[in-house]
Figure (cartoon, chains in turn green, cyan):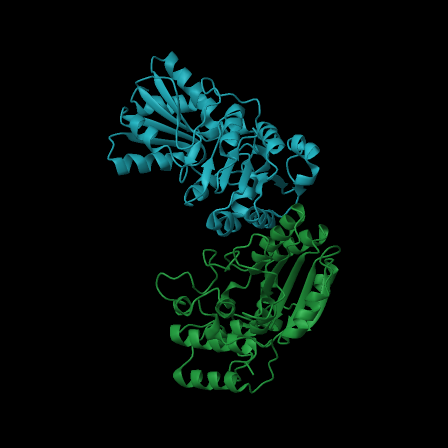
Length: 286
Length: 307
């Protein structure tokens, strides 16, 4: 039996963070299951309809919380869109695989990194599909603290006004931001009610249950009605006991001992982390 | 110039279905030629300039050519980071239309003045920056640039009746347009100061001083060749802009003079102080800032040591 996809994404997040000695580990672990649900693996489909990253009729994806991009690189690698050699340039000199997604990397539709901007890009992508009579959809993953940005709500209003039913937002509700817990820094609750009040179709989901995320997306009316948001309840640093809900793992890199423990926890699956079964990573290397 | 813009865009939209127009709830009595003709391609996004540029970026990635429209300061400064991270970084054909360069919105105060937009836009590699001098040149510039693969920023004047004598609608990217062949003094005007700069040249001519005027509408790509050639022929140049004197055409000319080691003294005419709450008509404010034709002529005489 193959390890679940999200577990492979987590392993890559840990390996690459350790190799490059960089942080943003907790944020990437937080969205591992969301990314697994959207992208799937080399042989199992995700919710995104992407025949090839070069297909103009592919669904568009915006990782608005760009600092979690390592989870996306891991998915690209597992899809076979990124070689192991390229993956290993993460945070190196002269690479496009930096701490935030760059549009020149195959598979990245939009560069991000400045919070509060990605949803507008997704809104434009969804509107473009409608104007062109295309069945393309647009998916955007935003962080919960990103909802502090006023510009995000400009896009929220626009999408609801124009009833962009082909737009899906997933909010990574891990309750943390750079310097503290969101409940202490800037209260967001009731977050789902706020999106609903702006006219969105709101769903609540366990953000670590990839199958549940896929089921909700499969049931959305993407041809008429309001845009959709999944409020995905997640645990920051999910899968590594000493990182979970710990502020320091927003920026902190791992020591050797921490790395060994983290890798062991993810490998032995000390917590239930459901996800799709896929081919081994080595089979996906180009 | 906004009327000329709307007219030219409507004509382009007739033949190119990729063209869309988005406005941040501005353009009353200006955008109707487009909005009436192409209602399904016209979007009033509300008072939300950041989202407007972000949405335009998403539209452009899918193959559209979106024009986004607002007053200069909101189009440029409010949405600046979205412009930088969106159409500039992705090199997508979004066109940002700012109306009211300088202090054209005189009584509205600093919140509505576009006095640093060229400065902040000109520093961005990969962004074409155009400040037309009159309505006819606006039309030429819109028609000449609509199909560029990368983004464009337009700084338009409000006044559709403005005409720069001798310009005749000429425009070319990376070129400056010369008016007159006088040999005593060079005047370099940015965009909507073209007319009053030519008027200043006429005043100087009546005093026996012949001038050449270069109208700079293409700020990026800058008319390096034309400016270098002209600056090499004159001991003194007056730069004239409805803009802070830092960052605009005065700075551009200074860069060219310094880098080329040219022996030309640069006298920058523009807005030198923060308005600090003083409002009034554009004419009043231009007097205050030394940008009226008579004031420009006086500055020129002083620079030439003939006052």
